[in-house]
Image (cartoon, rainbow, N blue to C red):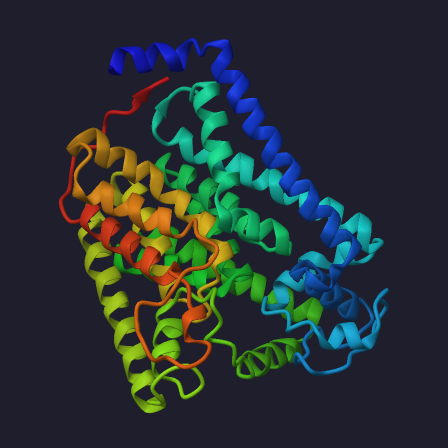
Length: 417
């Protein structure tokens, strides 16, 4: 069976290419329809919030606003439309990065961002595959994994909202390649860049500290400091004060796309959705977060010898799901980052076979393919059933990567290209 599979990969038949091209055509049509919808009605696009923030920065105004605040600024939509957008939750440094696009017409800016985002996703997948092949991965394998990646519902959701997941995925995939190649300084700088754009990526820096990878740790920490200064210099020091003040106004933790511990316990214990135990909710969230940090610390310390030998696949595989489940808003459109687990997953399959750990991982990942699901608890209020299965899927992925890293294994062999 393995021999036939190798032949199929090295010399794929015409019928296989035909099926893959049909699949690619369907994906293209779905993404194209989403692009045209967002272009015609940007009110549904998160990218429009980024665009407005950068425009307001150019105009010398505050880049942040609350959901119900009417804002000014050079924009094609009315203040009523502005009021319908929830705030831009990205730090000031990202607003500075968006300024070149804000100088363009919205349609052009959104088009450029969409193309850039898709390229980041495609290149990121190729970089992830490169970690487990000698030489270049077979074209048919690369193409197939690309199709799976863009068929993943959270990937489509990221594109549909004009979000940053593909950009962050590319940065972290490139960081993984640099770290595995022994260039921990470059890898650390890229991790610092990711953390400067999305705060939850700072979890990587914490794990680098636990793993005693000092070169990567200091490179990433220094990068965050430098980019914070850039954001303050170009966006104003007050922008950081406004940013953190705006974060305190967030009150949508119970929404159905929140796959974090915070969202899970909010749904169960809040008066709005569940049993009305707000005090207990905070304690449960903090306990779960603390346990996650302790798990990260333990396994990062255990991985110190692997990291010293430039074997970062297990490190990244553990960091990604842990940072997603501990991030308070648990955005499901950042789940494409879970594809960074695959180099470690392939090591698991090669060294231990298709055991329970691999099955649990794929079960969890398959659950996260779902757009919406049902909460397993009863009596959570009128809106309780809207909580989806994303938390359970992500939690299973967390369990799988923890067990993957429980025992060290020989990872010297790579798949032959």
